[in-house]
Image (cartoon, rainbow, N blue to C red; front, side):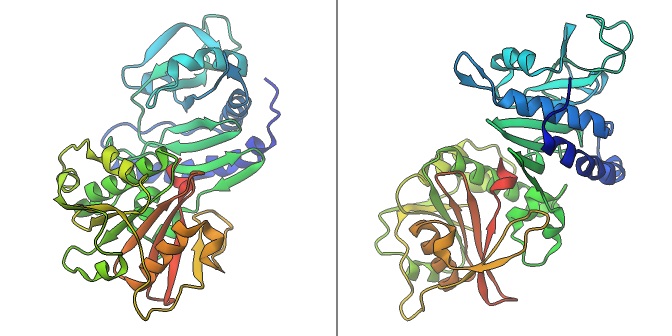
Length: 374
């Protein structure tokens, strides 16, 4: 297949370098097998096929697929096709309805001699499907027409895949994983960027990541405030009485302690209600539909630092209005007035921002992390 997607050729060497750099680390800490390194030609070809597939429709439906560069013998309980399929947009589009559910990957690898049908030896082909892939396996997900997300398994079944890059048309965004090393990076951001977190925090961060994902899914926009459990001072920044206050609801706290909990989707759904949903840092729900008000005597927030974990992006000082509407402005005001709290804001268009107070800069820091949540 002739390669014709320019962004694939641009980003393929950078992706090859990323996976090569993490191979040794992955081998040391992985409990199981580590995926073989993808070569630059395979990366380029898979991205090209995924991009053109994303622009096709099958019976009017958008194509959603996930491709993993992996030999079948490295997959866990794979379903093997008796006849290999070509890595071709037309073939992938026809197959998409069968494999569009989350967690199913189409395996792509170089054909061996004697393959059926008779592929040229070494040509890339689709050998089947799998749900189980090894650590550091290269995956490209077709998220929307023209939108590709490159990610890999991070070695833990409970954790979200780690996003490496996002391609949207001719726009290439390589994630800057080194931002996680900065002392003022939010814990949520670090969890999304790094292979591992301290054991005591891991499950709690998984909870937070899944809540953030759930907030984006309803596409109505929403705000989640995380406040200190040991103090009630945050209530001075909420219009009283809180419209939908609840007695502390601790199912999320149970999940953060290692117990599976179906309440994440339900609480994520609460953020669709006008106003903010409030959790304490013990992951107990305190209420939703809360109206944020400026603390008496506090100045209105006029500036925040905006940053995004993308290579080449530089932090900028902006007015909160430039981040979105009143939802972002009120979240920035809340964090300015309640500096030991955190605000998570999902926009209707899928953008996601974490607001935290930066003691080093004495300003509210807005971290755009939607690239990591795709």
